[in-house]
Structures are given as structure tokens and as C-alpha cells.
Length: 356
Image (spheres, rainbow, N blue to C red):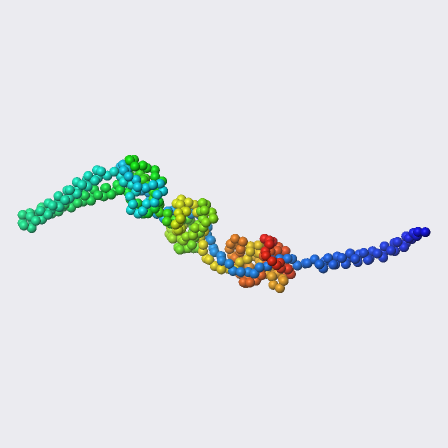
């Protein structure tokens, strides 16, 4: 025969079980809380010194070390060209020869007159010493001999002007003229460029001139060679400032042994100055508040907020001028989780994130 619980007995039973259930839940909750860590996990790295340099960026134009355009001195016919497109010529080498037949005939006549005048002068000098010629006649013959020699020298100079030579060694431009052509006086024959080094001209605002000096190093990049840095030095600074732009022209010299740089190229220039060793921290380690900057230094498992004075940025590093000492451990990952004086746990092993 089954038994049915009395209502009062079941109610009393529930009243007895309820406190036990609440106590069990509270115990489980307290156990979970004991196992959950309260300190944030961060990464801290020691502060080290790194090399920083101040840079002034500008844009400049490449120019040949020496460049000249050879032109015809007179209107005449070209009888010989001694260069090829883009060829190399040495200093003093003949580049072009103009017709000079008439001038050579004039030279021969002038030289013959000079020889005859010289012989006449010798005979007259002998007669003067023997008393058969006056000093006035001798002086007149001296003048005639000198005039004949001058005419011969003039004829030689005229012929020399029709032989065009390279004033320095360099590369010749593309040839746009042919043998047999008649050129007018002043017509371009060839352009010679010395590419052994490049003159790089760029402008610097007058407010930045104090940071620029002769002999200072520069780094240049060309769009044609984005992965290459061309190093050079400042050779001269224009002593006159442009009144319109309020800037001065600075000229740097870049070695160009492999002829990668060509005149007319546009280059970006970085002037390197004030190289120094300073403490550095990753950019993500610095917290900014208004105009002030802070980092978190870990000492004894506690993160302390320290005010710092920063310098320039170089990639992902920030220069620290004041506030830190070498070797101090600075939080580099997990900065946003921290407050001043908070206990932290340090992550071990290699860096695996980007911070924050």
C-alpha cells in the first residue's frame, strides 16, 4: 500500500534544501573566482639605446658634373663627325671638322709673306750695319715682318675654329646632324656630359639653414631605383636667398661611377644631421595625454606610470630624451589595460603581437 506525503511535510523539506543549494552555488562561484587571474597579462622589454638622426627632406634635380653644348662657330659645311650616339669622348679629342680649304690657302699665303718679310729684314739689317740703310727703313721692315707673322697666326686660328674638340671627357648626346650638312653659326653639333659624379641642387627654407652645412651627408633616392640609396655630401650653399621663395639653393655631390643617375632626374633628398645614441621604446609603448607622454615601467610586478620627454620618431621607435634609464623594463604590449600602480603578469617567450 503506497504512502502520500503530507503537504506540510513537502514544504518543510523544500525549506530545508534551499539553503543547501544556495550554499553550493556560492561555493562554486567562490571557486571560480579563486581560479580567475585578476592581473592583466603584458609584455615588458628593457630600454636600450639606438641611433637616431635628424633629417631634413627636400626634392632636387640632378645635373651633370660638367655639361657643354658644342656649336658651330661659323656657317660652314661639316666634312667629318668623330662621335657616335651616346659615345664616350676624351678631353681634347676631335668631335667635328668643318670645311677649311679657303682658310688653309690664306694660311699658306700668309706664311709665304712672313718668310719673305723675314728674309728682307735680314738683308736690310746687314746693310744697316754696313751703313747702307737707315734706321727708319729697318724699322719699317720690322713692322712689315711682324704684320706678316700676325696674318699667318690669324689664319691658323681661323682653321683651329673649324676643328671642334671636346673640352673635357664625357658622353655625347644623340647625333642629330650628318656629314656634309651646312650648319649655321651657333647651330648645335653635340652635347657632352661628364657623368662621373652628379650635382644635386635642391632648396632649403631659410628657417632650416642653421641645420645645413658644407660637408654634411645626404641620402638621395630616384624613382627609377626605389630600393637604392645614393649617398653624397653637401658641397656648397648659395649665399643669396631667393626673395620670392625665402629659400636658398644647396648643391650636393653624388658619386656616379655606374652612371645610374642621369641629368634631369628628380630625386628626393634627406639631409642627415645630429646623429646620436638615445634611449628608444616602441611607438605603442607611449601613452599620450594632451602634450604630455607616459610609459609604464614594471618594477616588482607592478606597473608604474612614468612621464617621459620624447624626441623624433624613426620607424616604429620613439626617442626618449628624459624620464627613463637604460635597462628599465617598459610595457610594450597591453598598455591599454593598465592603470598606475596595478599589478601585472609578464608574458614569456618571443613577441607574438603588435601591442595594445
